[in-house]
Length: 365
Ligand code: KG4
Ligand code: ZN
Image (cartoon, rainbow, N blue to C red; front, side, top):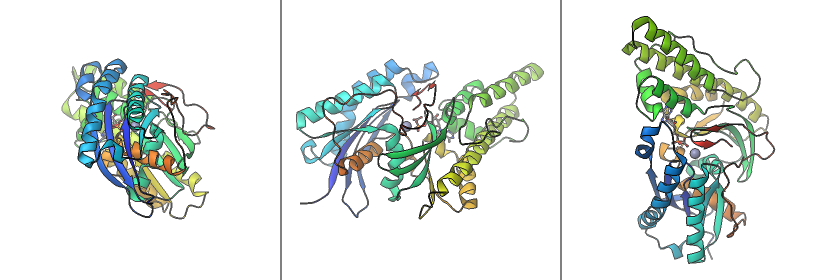
């Protein structure tokens, strides 16, 4: 008898439909046998954000196609797997329901066990999939829908040190791009513009830096940028190229400064646990931003912590992280059954106070 576990993972909590197969044998590196992601960017392009009903329908249409493709690429039949892991929340509820129903159908049809996974745990456990990082480590989730610091202490044990009280940074990048007439997703287009700009020309705020703790706020930054934009339009009759580039550079630097300073504070708090190899890991689309990455790397250098950024395909929403988080739960003997519920909100740290608000990408846990 071998302890090897092979799970199918399903993800449909936001605007990516994904299926993946991951295999793990104790003492060996986990293997991502396949990871299929079908995005929905074009479906929502005209609406300036993810439309939950459109997302749910698209998930329902794409899930079985992604599962078929993931099994084909892994060269496995369903019956050769040990179980089916699925995102059961938090997220846009229609999409989460579509994934949970698909997983229940597969489990009922095949007789395989079902494992419900918290989407945030999927992100937070990714460093163990990619680098076998040992607990405890510090995690910064920073995407279009999430922004929080977590200390990962065990597969189901997380302490939240702080998070955004309003927009997630990716959401702020997307709104900034919209205000400046740049294409979506906003992160990459704002980053490209920022390369040509002067980050010091505009004095944009660094919200909540004057307050202790690790909570963050990004919506005031966007309002300040809107004010500068409107002033420039009145002064010059429109936005010049240099104005747009300088606004992008100023905005990006402000976000990087806030994330860096709050990371420094989170690292100091985490270091009190005396981790063997102190590590700050990031996940989420915003981790692709080179200037934010280098700001975080600098903070890690200064605090003698390792900086870990998994490959982008495993940083952004994907199902390999769900399969992996499922493997961690499966190993500890956890299983779900047909009563598994889809949850719009599902904080990882049940003891932390609720973060209010719901972003354009769904509920913030
Ligand atoms: O993790 P992700 O793919 O999806 C979720 O939000 O769950 O992250 C997407 C977000 C978008 O808001 C996008 O604008 C942002 O990540 N993003 C970036 C960059 N690339 C993607 N933000 C800043 N700089 C980038 N290079
Ligand atoms: Zn996510």
